[in-house]
Length: 234
Image (cartoon, rainbow, N blue to C red; front, side, top):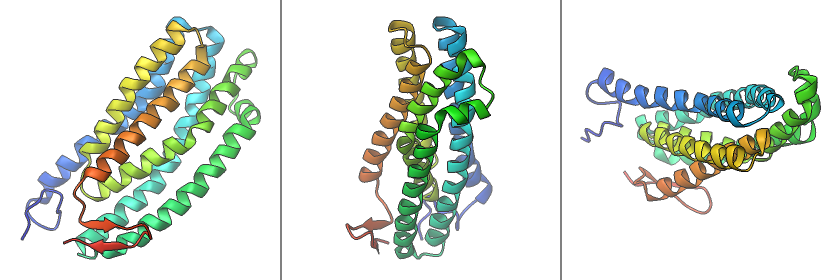
């Protein structure tokens, strides 16, 4: 039998859970650093209103990310369950259903954040002098919501496969891109809160491309066909 450390049905469970948990914790910490980096750079090189806008906008984005992450956790659980039961052919329905649900979710969030950015900003009690910049921050991040949702879904797939290190790598790359983008757009071009939002979206887009490339190269216990059917390769 296989003794792969991603197989939690064999060997020491505590050791494998620890190896799975620590990268997840690291990824969560790095995700939380997104808003902190934006605040630091805008606070240093931007305006006071821009700092307030990023602070309020980050709260909105964090709330959306939290909801998406919790839903994606269900995908992780189902994939892990079917792999543990040696029924990888069932994962096709999981991935197909998840693709539909998260696409609908992305469209809904996109409409909310882009179309109703001002009411949302006012609801979050953005300071009057910072409402305009907050609206810009929220709209730009809302426009890139598809990347944010896709990243969390891809991370859920990797974790369901027992690989929590790859999502940590994705978010690390995204953080580095975000820092570089903040410095270039905010400090270099003086784009204030809008620059921070663009850097955040760009960082998420890079992490999604990176994740897709790694998923394609990864040796999976199932084969994905164009029709979304899954064939066991075990």
